Image 1 (cartoon, rainbow, N blue to C red):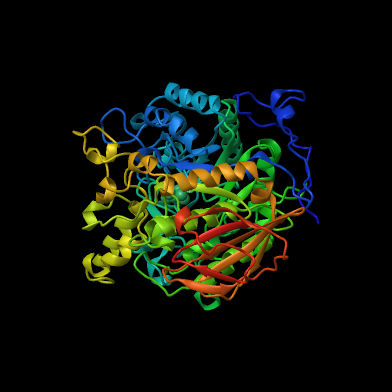
Image 2 (tube, rainbow, N blue to C red):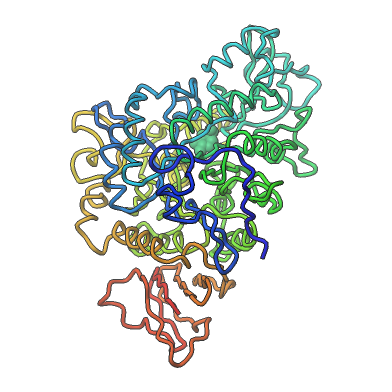
Length: 622
Ligand code: NOJ
């Protein structure tokens, strides 16, 4: 098996958990573990494969200064909570200075902390507090675009001759009569330089009165795209990364990093050949070259680097190039793809499609097998851009606890690194938003307003169910700490920046910590189990019953240890023939299951038949 080839050629060792750089031979860190030990099935041991990552969206996590916005001191006061849950890494969404057109994904200064969140001293205290508990910190790198208020863009837009003009994409428009696309802004006789659409709806170009040219923004008009073809841009990004690494962080989550190479000439879409904007801008011709340059200049295999890779289906060849560790590969630790999140979704927020469990299994099987021999998966069911896991893939009504724990089992027993998004460990649900004005998200508000203006939809009410199901704001309502006012997220007199889910009196941390059967305790047990058993991290994944409409089953094998995972992904009891052979004298034990002990009558194997209750999950050691 040609698994990861440890590459010793890279120049930098990462920050260790004590905040210093490089694990010197003989140091506590290197004695604790041989980072490149190879396991019986050829897997190379890495701390970031064994880790469980917890994602924090600071704006909604915990507010300590009573302004209704979460802050860094608020995170510090919850580090003990994270430690108790057992997570190993925190991924922090952007905390840099930003005008917040897209909640921090529009950075105006990469080296300053946003006032609303605190100070650099607060951030340093957070890093120290996390490291003191052996929790590592991964920062968000937003480098496909900046804010239009970033100094680089300000200089770039100053004049056509600015020394920073080539740091962004400035182009002349077209004669509006000569092309088939248009924009509502800009001179009436001009059309944008091409027909690309922004990910947030509307043209991807904005006209600049002062210089008479258009600039490219694949997201909001306040998020101009950086031009990575300009060497100075790459240097500036790499320097910024170095600067944060010097502070002792443990890795980066790289925002839409597969968009950084744009196709030469910026050609329009080609509907006849089925090529849309997304196809045009993902996996551009120089993307691997740029990432390899970044790898050589800045990164090390001992950092956790996770690339967010937007788009439709990613060819596995590209995936292996991104996350392969060989000398000609890009060397990211792992990537986020969107293929499971796209199931059931149309192109617009309010479009939905039918999907089935076999579709979902097929996505995971493709990625589990696609990266089996080279590369590593990032596993996630939600984040700050997605609806809540239990509402999206489970049942947030009658079987909320059962389905949330089943999905937790899946998350922790596939091959890859699990990512828990804040509140997922409680089974937090989608939010009953009542009107468009209750939403805060640019990706929800702008496209809906534009579609209403153009008569494409009649009103918010006409698509309210779909928007409620799909909006990113479902993930962004405050973390539910207790049944106190505003869920304990902020002082009782401060109105939070976004509404609190009204179900906080029932679903909250305080209640779940008291209840041994809660979703929270189940997450904690899964995380602890992963710490104890290498097979859970490194075992080979072999799918079973792939065509079954409601049961998801697979084994994980490492050496002579085999685990069997069986999940009834439905609200109906199901009986299946056990898809595995168990010898007469075997005594397969259940390692974890999501029905309480007293209700676990039929769990024995062998016996051939498995009777699974609604949303039941079991993990056996065969
Ligand atoms: C992906 C981020 O996760 C999302 O929140 C953001 O809006 C876009 N990238 C643009 O930065």
